[in-house]
Length: 364
Image 1 (cartoon, rainbow, N blue to C red):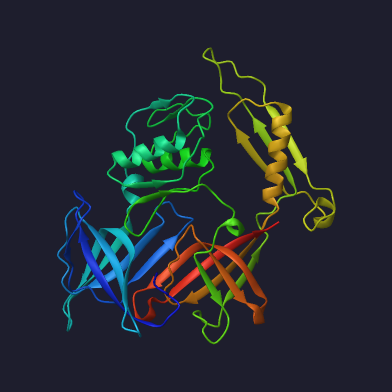
Image 2 (image 1 turned 45 degrees about the vertical axis):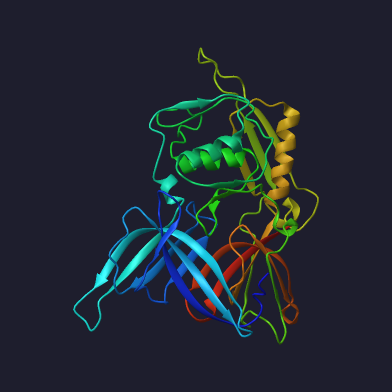
């Protein structure tokens, strides 16, 4: 296995990938090594890129795959795929000494986001939620990598244009349906790997994920000295209400709702007495529940609502790290020691493949 902590010389390769076969068919020439790749776990499409070409002619329905080709000081070499994208738009600069085109590349999840189910359909109770989400993706031409899941829908769920919805807004888009099913099963939202395959992973707390990279202070450090450290308490609550409303019957009758509640009066950092006021979070669910269920859910949400968000932004040379992964940071001289989940990345396609990674963790 290659040791990415060793110095290397970086170059980049851009390959055309056939949409029909998934195979790389040719090397795309004329693309300069001055682009960027953006990854953001808080967006639905997750990734995008911008490159500059001196001879962009378009590639029809096909895809672009970007590689880092690394040559190490000991003479060994390694190639790492950085992403597989849809060419979405391009703009030209003309009339000067050189003619160039700026090419915008979009993550492949845009293919699902821009499509939707044109009519209502219903998944019956007992449907394998993750299995059906994977089926939607495979039917759209994707390869899928998914964790095993035993979760089955406890009740029927309707999707598509015209589907009935207790919230008044039906889930119609294919990516929205996929992510809704994954969320119900306790999975993170769908993302793509560097080869354009859809990845479905069960959600795991950042501190419980095995790290994909480690950044340690010292003479061999692979990150820049300046690191941003943030602590965000804006999402904290000290009281929670949850409202369960059973779906209306066929004759239109609506059962009375069940309201669960929980509050922190224990005297901790964010308790009602410490803050001096109530900060309330409210959630609604369209399903049946007992009072015990509702109170238990409120208590669970209260626990997660008192998580302080910690963020660090680290600039480092390339590491095999992407959104959904975790990394360890040991910057002891600045008091920064911890494990963080990758939220965003900005990769500069230049010397060292310099990457700015923002990680987050939750303190409870």
